[in-house]
Image (cartoon, rainbow, N blue to C red):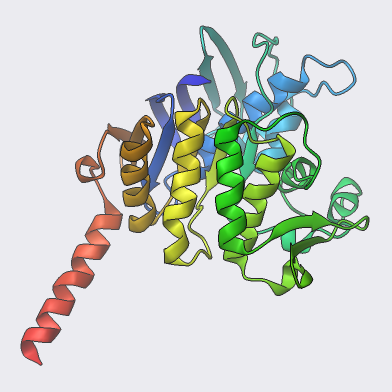
Length: 335
């Protein structure tokens, strides 16, 4: 699992150093503070290193970075400045470190594979894709779909009903819980369409609520063996389109996976999600690390670590809730 990330002049980060926890790592901050960029960079590094072991699937890191971030060119990932510039990236996986650098006019990144025996990462975007899966992979491969590669990768990982081996009992418990809440299981047609299947038949994913699609996605990834206790999972805004009543369930799945050995990275704007992650981490013995990201005038985006939600500084999520609470009190007193 990832232990550390160090960035210099990469996208919004002039200088950033993060030490990750073994369990759940949560990124909070205003829009434009690079939460998703951190997760996408880690995903790209892990994915490229995973495939570097297979001569049939090896991919250059510059190609992986461009497919994940979708810039006009590789050099656009260097922090904007007048004239040319360069960025450096250093990441530590267990006891091995990988370092790379490239300039604003670069087209390639030279890096030697140094990580072995690592799992294929999973990236769950904020926008649903399982409800729009028919011929999506074909469209992506032919350049007809202007999406980043994480959507294609997620669809490839979602193979309902096809287990890659025995499912441990802790994950079976999660499957039963997810099935109970979404009232069924997930199947997929030969054409690639996903269905929610229950005792009355099956319903196309575009016809069911996006919150249930999230549960179905989790069920599918666990059932297929793509999401295991050795996984590294990146999830961008898991609360998006999720009924608040289901936030606790999603937080429980995340923390149970982390307690079993998975490393999870979450970017969120939700008070309920962070608090539920805090509660579930305590209940299930999962390690929880929080990072407050803030854009500054002189240093770009900086990150401040915390162990508890109350210690996050700055905390725009709490600021917004306090503003709403104070307005509610004022309106009640003036009414």
